[in-house]
Length: 111
Image (tube, rainbow, N blue to C red; front, side):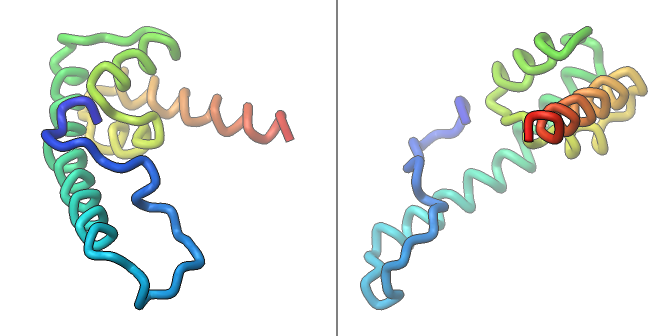
C-alpha cells in the first residue's frame, strides 16, 4: 500500500510448515503490522477511493482507467467488490461489477 507508514514484508501472510514453538517475535510483530495495515486499508484508504469515485473527481470509463485509479490509490483490484458495495453512484457500481464479471470470465475461459 503506497500510503502506509511502514514497509511490510511480502511474505508475512504465508503459512509455513514451521512448528509454532519456533516462531520468532519478528513473526508476531509482522502479523500485528499486517493486521494494522489491513485495518488502515479498509477503514481509510478504500473509503477515500470511494469518495474520490463518488464525487466524480476521478471518473474511470474503462477497465484500464479503473485499474490505474485503484493502483494509484494503493488499492489492489481484489477489493472491487468492497468498492462496489460502498459506492453510492450507479456508474461506479456498474463499472466495478462489470470488471469483476470480466475478470471472472477471463479466469474461467483461461482454464
